[in-house]
View (cartoon, rainbow, N blue to C red):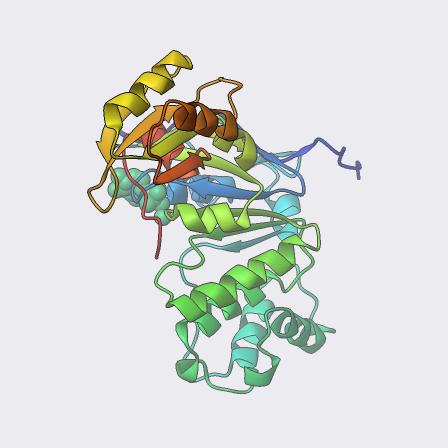
Length: 321
Ligand SMILES: Nc1ncnc2c1ncn2[C@@H]1O[C@H](COP(=O)(O)OP(=O)(O)O)[C@@H](O)[C@H]1O
Ligand SMILES: [Mg+2]
């Protein structure tokens, strides 16, 4: 088996496309998911995330394009790749009248790659990793949604995995369940497993992921390290003042392009993008004060990922659950 290089890719697609009738649900995407990353696959509902994930796992065939998972072409190498990949694609079907442990035993038995000899140890270890040991004997119908989702992740973790693919793992969960799943993903990531996680929630991806690809209408509109994408956004300064014209004149004299606007409380303020200006906040404040502009508030706003994504996709993302 070949060692994966530091800069190797856990998932790579070239011009991957899926067409349903005349509609391209996934349109020529080039994904590059670095080994060891926690990679967010972000996009509004209907943008093609689940369709892509189904192709990655060989659950549906691509119309055209190429897929490599863990360095091997898919679906040709399905049998050698899938045992190393844990997946949670839409809620797994559990029997409510069976305990969590009994459900995992059933699912493990159905896995042609899993030996029966150490089944119970394997199931208990998976329950332990998702924090469900205490509820192992409890019937699944008495589980909360967050516990069911964690059981689904335990199922994905029955074998040691090089890659975990989670399709919207917090969808439909209450805030407590969301926190449980988020913490679990974080702890799994800290063990070095590559995690590919989709979401339509920007905040989710921002809190969990090192890298992101942004989907819009079947296409990738941005991809890379979250920090790099954030920097592509715009830093702005915001001045609250009763002396709007005087403040704007000072900013113009400093080479900025101010606009007058309203803040959330409908107070007038002057806002200017800093672009690649080397100006620092304290110099701007000093210039305003020197010109006797009354400054009641001043802020340098770091670029937000949300602004960046809205400008890339032309749509807003749900920022909170
Ligand atoms: N089996 C299918 N047949 C026809 N259209 C489909 C099918 N699956 C998905 N689609 C369409 O493909 C697009 C992308 O869907 P999906 O991949 O589920 O998006 P997401 O997971 O980002 O919400 C949607 O327009 C959806 O209606
Ligand atoms: Mg989906």
